[in-house]
Length: 82
Image 1 (cartoon, helix red, strand yellow):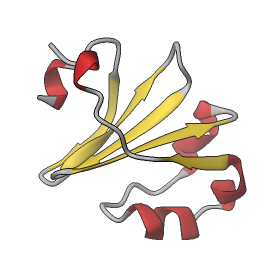
Image 2: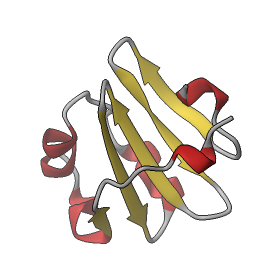
Image 3: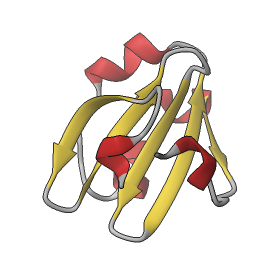
Image 4: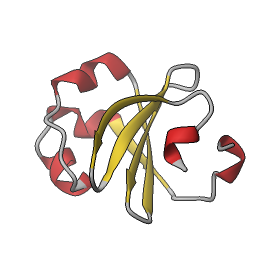
């Protein structure tokens, strides 16, 4: 399902899910199995410095960007998908 997402550009994927970004909305989407976290950041390109991990909480703890990342409440985004 995620692979068919409209307007999302894949920046990292593993067997558990992946991390996607939407350039136009400057949001990061973390998809891990059935759990989806939508993150919004001030400057997407600074995220390239992050070490990708399956655990979102550990990722936030591992980066100085945590203060710039807002975790949005997970909601159903099926209208983004084909």
